[in-house]
Length: 638
Image (cartoon, rainbow, N blue to C red; front, top):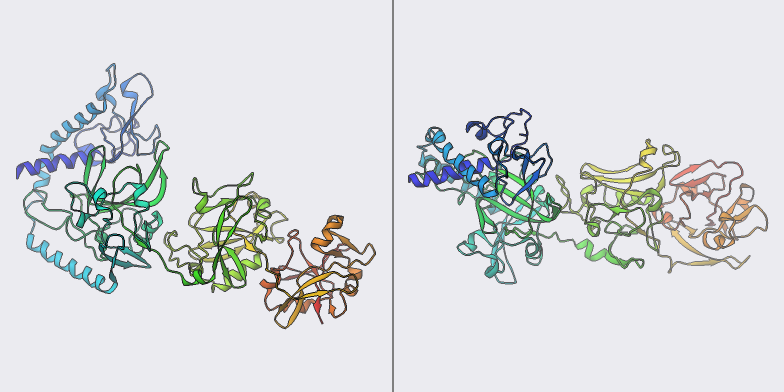
């Protein structure tokens, strides 16, 4: 029994020393680690530290002296004022110590500290086993009550293995670790049935059964939100299994249950081991996420979720860290969210410019891209590094106005307003179901908005904020957990230089619309019925034979493409027989403004139409024209 205790103490102190101190580079800073102070390391002078599991010592010589040689960890951020150093113990040597010498020295410190800690540890002995068993019973009752209400089972069709699952919040999780492909995933000596397999990151990404997927980092954070746990420094006992985490008390005698969790949600996390060149560690539950990351040296890694229990502490903790993708770790799969609306209203389109395929979704009368545009332009950049295909690209305002593929356009303020109304102003119905921290995204319509800026999604619109922007900024569409907003600007200088993502909306499909031929010149126009009225779906192109009707930019080919621009003097006498120029009330009373706006030919953001009352209509408002200006006309059937 004494041997067990000694081994425990060695691991205790060694692990304590493995916690990097925040600052200890000859600054006089106080120790952040009480163990360092206890064993007599001079404050601010030298730190004896080993890397967190998975990290390796790297050397950074500031000068030729060993006391100015930094020993930093490959899996921690490196800055010269916040790294562990060895310091005075090695000064005076011609050569700096090897990694083995560093680790040997740490073991010697551990042995020296064991005697000093003995008295403190003895005070923890003599725990009441019966009391611990009573607590365990209460925990089981709490957990089983939750599982009976929210739990389920399913069978992996690939190998027939049955798994428990549990619904926590709006997510359904496996309640045990995946053990698919046991021959390669389960290591020798490991109980695969209870602990599951260990997968490297590449295999983990593709390991989940049909209808399930490897969770993202955000989905794990959402799990913490759903269980009422915060992001930092809060116990995660509620996710840890009620047994399997500890056997001996701190004196190595009685079986107790203090090391175990409460598992009130039935997630049942168990400690597993993960490996790097034969090194193993127990006492942590480590799960892969599908999220990529970069290690301190810039190489690719996978983000892992750690649920940790230090056996000498009263509480647990969780961490997120980027880990070498070759490490073996556990997998918990989360259920895909079914969406019958998407299957009924969804489609795809291919951007002919680069061959990129996009999912599309029809919401109301408009057909939207269901992903951010990812077409590369001169000034565009990825929303997130190395994840252009998922998050799309950001564009300047000028690029955004013309970047959508043929047959699609940048949505107006009114079209985004229609989207907002179509989903009942419920932001969760537009949010991706997995990616929003602290949100409850349901993605009912398949719009699948991803957070692209501090847990927000912002998109350019084609509508100018003429009241505040001084001609330099457009309205933008904003999604956050607290709601949907369409915002303008009163800080145009900064917004004019912003880069935002783009969602494109399809031009109105007009192939099947009724047509009308103007007998005066033979021009044919498409017509659209909106409410009780029939409107021209194209701008009028009747030539008055005078300077009162001109082509856009005075280019004759623009008349065929965009119609003509007319002066105030002729507007009330140019519509063909059976049609008239709409008045102010006609425009204000359009029953489906989204449908009308979808027919607007977007030559510029200045598209405005004459009314018979000699006003201009645009963006759901009436304006007074300036003297001598020319604008297009839409006629309405009498």
